[in-house]
Image (tube, rainbow, N blue to C red; front, side, top):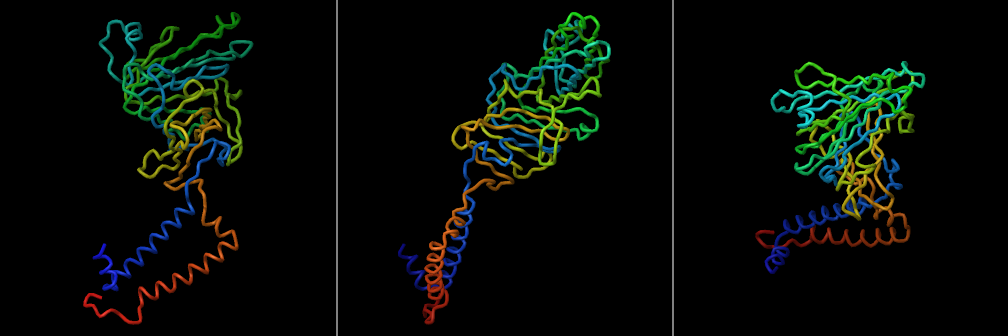
Length: 364
């Protein structure tokens, strides 16, 4: 401490460097005071609790709270809906493998496609076959670190389908799919629910009318949904920033909700700060719900309103307190502070950096 005091007395250069450093520190404190992150609830958000990821972006859920065997995503098909599935790095479970390929070797991970079709014109009611999809966290496999939800096909709008892609990183997802005729006796016998299963380079086969179970090992699950009758839309509408959009809302995250420690929207191909980063402020998790699938973007809602979050965009706080602005808006406090600081600062800088009688010290 003594040496610093001596250096301060004897060295003009040291005093100038210290003064400049003080200015820099003051500027940083002003920046922090004018952009101090504040917690918000879903109703406070500009999007009213809904965030979006466009083509080329993905929604990343950190540490999703999904127990082994519990639901990651589910879908129960309705009238006029056709569901197709493509799996990367996937295998059939033992039961399905032995049933469909009884004399084959143990399956190795490959691309698997499961496509369906329906013909509503064959029934008076226009009923179609229904496909049910349930994706769960694989049992006896490593936990999920992240779960990414995104789209890859910017032609979805023109082709009239909606797409959802899931990626669990190093973890394994289990998927069960079943397509069946309606239970109505009048239409049950009229509809032949065609399904095609393609595994790797094998020729496509039509599997029997039983649920099929598959595992995805460090791969993706790509789901497409479209109307069997193009003249009858399966999409609903939502009002967005760019006008009214047609969205598909029959896909559910988890068992209607899903919890994670953090939500991010990131660019798929570039290593840049998260476009959006939502972090819980008063709890250890964020509740996600209401997945909406548009032609070129995904929407996900967060909440309920009892939860609060801090939101960052491109590394900067999106919702913040501006203490400097609040102080400046008060005319009395702002005038008093400006007068006091101005006089003190001017005298201090003049005395420290531009003294009239410089020290005679050699290192001054």
